[in-house]
Structures are given as C-alpha cells and as structure tokens.
Image 1 (spheres, rainbow, N blue to C red):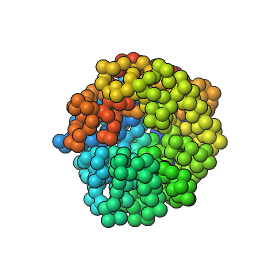
Image 2: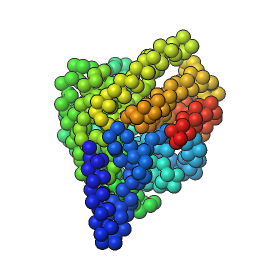
Image 3: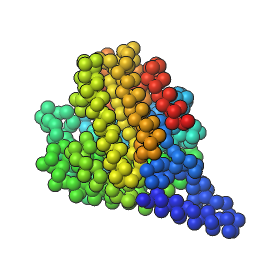
Image 4: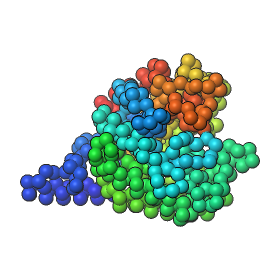
Amino acid sequence: MYSRRSIIVGGATLVAGCATGAPSGVAGTGVAPSRFVTVDGLHFRRDGKPYRYAGANLWYGAWLGADSAYGDRARLARELDRLQALGIRNLRIIGSAEESPLRNSITPGFRGSGSTYNEDLLKGLDWTLAELAKRDMTAVVYLANFWEWSGGMMTYLSWVNDGKYINMNDPAHPWPEFPDWNAAFYSNPRAQALLRDYIKAVVTRTNSVTGRRYADDPTIMAWQLANEPRPGGSDAVAVPNLPHFYRWIDTTARYIKALDPHHLVTTGSEGLKGSIEREDVVLAAHRSPAIDYMTTHIWPNNWSWMDAGNLAATYDAGAAKVADYIATHVRLARQLGKPLVIEEFGYPRDGAAAYDPGIPTTFKDRFYRQIYAAVEADVAAGGPLAGSNFWAWNGEARSRHADHRFVRGDLAYMGDPPHEPQGWYGVFDSDASTQAVIRAHAKALAG
C-alpha cells in the first residue's frame, strides 16, 4: 500500500536526520511521521499506537467556519466542544460543493464552472481544520459527491454538456435515471479534468489560519474521492461502465498520492449497496494500491430493511440484515487486507415523519448500540473494523420551517443535508440517550 511506502520513506528521512543532527520528521513538513494516520495491515496507527475512533459526520463544517454572513465560528467551536466531550475523535467533512442548477443543492459552493474558487468557503475549511487540530481530532475530507445536495457529479456533467441535467426525485425521471445519468462522469474526460483542477487546488492548499500546507497537516486523516460514488443505478448501465469506474478510482487516487504522499486515500463507497450488490465490485473498487482502506455505509430505512411507521414490528428483521451487511464487509476487508470504516450509519426517530428533537430515539439508540457493539467485537478479535462515523451531528440547530424542509439561504445547518427533512437522521444536542450510547462506545474504544 502507498501508506507503507510513505512510512519507509519517512523512516529513511529519520535516519538521515539523526546522522546530520537535523530534526527528525517527514521531509519538508516539520512533523513527526507518527502524527499522520497510517495503515499497518488491517489497522490504522498514529503516534506509534493503534488508531481506532468513534467519529461523526459534520459535512457543514466549512460553512460554519467561514468568516461571512453564512458562517458562525462561535457555533462551530461549541459543536466541536460538544463532540469532543462525547469522545469523538474523527469528523468526516465535505471539502467541495459546486454552484449548481440542481434543485436541492447547497449554496454557496466552493466553485462554479470556472477556475475561480470561493476563497471565503475555503477559508472556512481552513478554520475548521485549525479548530480540529486544537482538539486533537482528525478529519476525512471528501472532494466530490455522487449526489445532488452539494452539486456533485451531475453539476460537473452539466458544465461540459451544454447545461443538461436532471434532478434527483424528479417524477419525470424516476429511479434509477439519476444514478444512471451520473455514471457518465467516469467516462467524461472534460468533467474529470475540472474536478482534478479543484482537487489540486485543495490538496496543495496552504491553510490561511495555521500557515501549514494541507499536504503536511496530520489533522487530515484521509482524502476521499467522493461521497458514495457508484458505477450507475441499473445493471444495464453500471455493468458496462465498470471499467471506467475502476479506472477513475485508481487514477484519481494515484493523482492525489502524487500531490500528497503523506495522507491516506479512500473511495467513500457505500459498499455493496453502492456496488450493484456485487462483492466483486466492492473488491475491485478498493483493490488499487492507492486506496488505503475500505468504507461502507448502512441505511436500513433508505433500503427498506425496516418500516419507520412500525419500528416495533420490523426492527429485528432489519437488525438481522444490518448484522449480515457488517459481517460481509468485514470478510471483504480481510480478503483485501485493508482496514474498514463504517463511515455513515443513520436511523430515524420513533415513528414515521418524526423529525422534531422532542420525539424519542428508542430504536435509533438500539441501532447505534448494534453498530458500536460490532465495532468493539471486531476490534477485540483483531479484525479490520477500525472506526465509525454516525450520520450526523445536528447539535444546537433546529429546523426553521414547520414542514422541516430546507430552504435555500437557511443558515441553521444540520447533519441532514438540504435534500432531506431537517431532523430526519441527525443527533441533536438535546438527545441525551443517544449521546450516552456514543459516549459509552468512545470510552470503550479509548480503553
């Protein structure tokens, strides 16, 4: 793996430094090699010790961190303090968003179709990473999105095909037209070139707060190619598209490694559900030596494994499928010889259309305990499961609208992105029982 090669290079630098009296560290960074998260077989390491973590998703960090009308740095600090108190060690955040014609996309974005990028929002990302460093947290930063809520691949395609696009959940374009259309990204060199330009700008950026290059910052655990990249929605499109999909993963990961040899790179894949339910596709998507670890996401409600309107009767059947899904991905990670992270998992509150923080979280808490028990058991067995990131942290935000829908211009950012009901899956600062489950797991891993 690339991470092992980086360790060898770092070790050679250490020896040379000792011989000349120069300070030891990763060449050119002034940072000890052990501060970067690295891969050692099935496991992560940091500071010379195994690195396992309870994590969260906080996609909107850069927006809060921006010194602008849409930012709120004081709230960002409060939210990070709350997460730190829970024992959260890693945050998965988005480092890209495209100014988009798509109905449910967030504004502002990091970029439009040209080569000028939103410096205010990039400085918001700078600020977020600097605040994470103060709390000794690490970040996984994803650099694109398969879905529409941040613009994503559909927007890149619209920039090179004379403005053509379709909206997700448009009745005129029923499922799986959206993912099938999006799959054209992997064989479109012009769209990919636009993304590569942006990747280069971010990965080689110097943080305006700390003065440290992103490529030299151990606060970043990993770069992620995209949020939930898929080869398509239907077999008819996805299967012939697989060579393009695999090539995009491998070449993009290698491109990032060439820009930044110190950080891990991974896909952002959902696992089987994002791989047309085929184990060989999951394995092939993570087999590149430039992909350091495997990811999976778990969404029982979205996948109709349970009925949100009748959780008491359907929870157990869904839980059995969750257990099998985790076990399958642990087996695949062992087969690959790489670590595994459950980097998204979400569950609704008690009842259908239950978005208000006053509604109980009985079954949500049970689901969290199941995920965490699986991680703890696999860690005890020496397996590849190294961490998890719940979806997602709402914190002190509350929906501004009676229908719990996001309206462009809303500043009460939640873990639920703009295309989803606000409060659907996120954890509020008032969710004491869910937080107790998170805290207990973080304590168990720390022990």
